[in-house]
Length: 128
View (cartoon, rainbow, N blue to C red):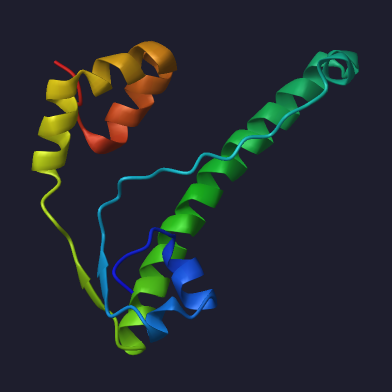
């Protein structure tokens, strides 16, 4: 196998480690999960119940993200045990190329200031 792109857990469950010796940890993808409600049904809920649901979902969303980080770390160790070798390439050249292309400003505009600020909180500044 020359290359593929999947979360580590899929590399394990699909047994790609049997034909893939190396894995580059680029962190170039982020998977977002969301919960959706029917707007009419949501509006029928009393305000206190809406607040409770929002609070619990926010807490659990943060717990889910931490579970994913833990699972990824555990899965990396598992795959090392199965013979894979991991490397962490320098991402600066990739980020520089995206900056020069105008990608980050375009994505910031499409995402909105609030979402972009949250992204940069975790990955550092992406736009000047």
